[in-house]
Length: 252
Image (tube, rainbow, N blue to C red; front, side, top):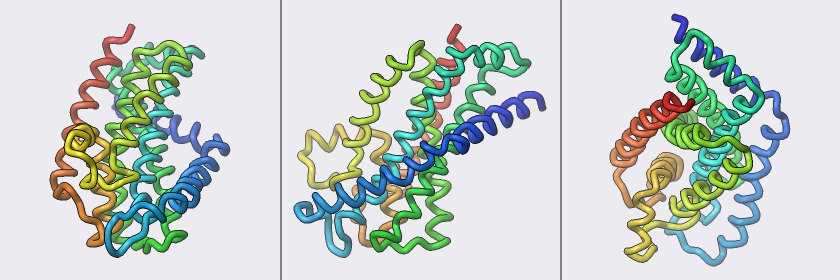
């Protein structure tokens, strides 16, 4: 029970920190809106993405994936803040295991990312996407799966970093390739063969493809079966949770 209380306390703390930061909540609305309106409109006239949808509709699931990725990775910085301000020391001397500490932080970061992802999803009506209850019920569990792995990446990297500057540099180095190589902004099947293989090793590729399959339905020509997307995402989550808990437990 002490382990569960510890996990719950850390989870609630991360959510409260997020909700109290009004600037971050506001940016979670306006930044994706700029991508959809400016970037989507600017390139929409020059990129063909298939029949039955426009470019803004095509990149909409990719923008959701971007939000989940960037938020999850950015929230990993909270681990460095806790270390620098001494809060992490207080947590480490508490009567709970380091694995529980990592899980509590991971669930908190994932929930924060989920909130931002849902905010972005509500923007779909601006570009003509019909948001229905069955769609939401399918997208939410998928978002959970996507954010768990991405949150673990951020927390694992933060476990080895001692400064905010170093983490910011590494975070950008990881974020941008994962986003641009996920097929969020362009169809994967139009790429050269050598670049397609690079895209296939990006775990976010399968998250974006699964989001498109649910949100766009039959209008989306998926390069992967939906069950394959889910299997790879779940396998990636399992691997990152094991790697993250191990890295955090080994950190002195």
